[in-house]
Length: 179
Picture 1 (cartoon, rainbow, N blue to C red):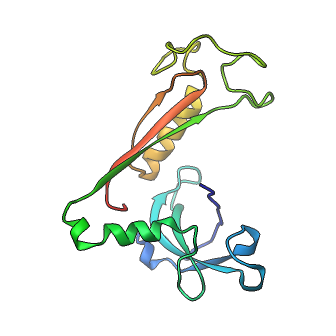
Picture 2: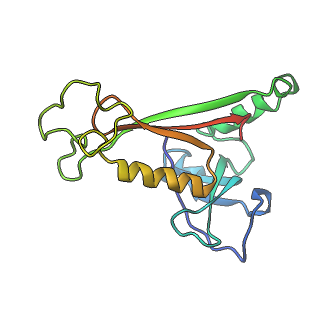
């Protein structure tokens, strides 16, 4: 996934994405539109409290469209929303959830956190859901991420250490439909 960010000043607090203005960006700079017709329009879809700036600041998830109102190819939420809004699908009340695994790297060595530089860790086993400074490498970062998601209102349901040092996972959901 290739996320991008822009900042915008609003006249006051907004809690409904439909009350936010559409915005745009140059899609040729991101490989999402040709240079001769590069405008991409952002349609606000969801609002979250900003865990970094706090106060009345918000983070907004947007879908990307052409100026003619067609979803651009990387707008995967469009097809998902279409599927989930089908009456036959809606009556089934579909749930989904994700588990995202990631590995934290040492700042200067570009090597997994908790691994000897240029070497390999001991066998897997003690790191999965492990605790303590010798097993849960980067827990302070993981806990900060977890707290930021909770503050923002993300439907995060858990975190855990994975099978190798510096490897973590977070879970989001279950969520109903495209929410």
